Length: 271
Image (cartoon, rainbow, N blue to C red; front, side, top):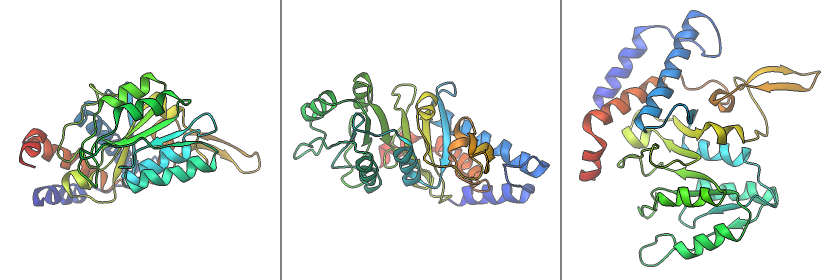
C-alpha cells in the first residue's frame, strides 16, 4: 500500500547504499540491512535462527529451481510431487529425470482435490526417499493440503520442500510447529511491494546437503582459474547468485511489519 511505498522511499533517501559484497562504508551499511531482513523474515515465520537460514531469490520460482538444481537426485533418490503443484515444481521433474531419478505422482481425490493419503503413503514407503514437494495451498484450485505430511514424509526419510507462495498471504505459517526442510515464497504475493524479491527458508542442515552445479559472483570466498579450485561461501550467501536486491530488501521488512500491524489472522478471516 501507499504507506509501505512512502516508508521505502524514505529509507532510500536516508543514505547511500553500496554493493553488500564489498567492505567500504556504504557496502557495510547494505550488508547490515540485508542481514537484518533475514532476521525479520525468520521472526515473522517463527523460525529459529539456530535451525533455519534465509536465501534471497528473485521469486518463489527461483527458490524452487535453486533446490531442484542442487538436490542430489539419482536412481536411489526420486522426485515426488503432486498433480496440483505449480508449474515451477513440475519443471524440476526434468532435472530429476536427467539425473536418472524416478518420478512419483500421488493421486488426488475427487471432489475435494486433496491428496489421496493412502496413495501418497504407498509411494513414500515403497521407494528410496528423495525430494518431496507439495503446496501448502494450490495456486490453481485454492485447496490447502495438510501440513502434517511434512513430518510424515520426513519420518520416512524424505526431504520436504513446501511451496508456501499461495499460502502465506492469508495464513500463518509457524515454523516452530511444522519443520519443512525448505520453504519457498514470493514477497509481493504477501504485501504487493516490492516485486522481484522472494526467498528460500532452509534448514541449515538441508542447505548444507545441497550440491550446487556451478557458482557465480558473490557465492564464493575463493576461486582459482588455473588451480581449478573454489570455496563456496558458508550459509545462505553461498546460494545467492550475484548481488542480492539490496535496495528492495528493506521494503520486505516494512511489508512484514505492516502485515503484523494488521494481523495475519484478521486477513485470513476476511479473505
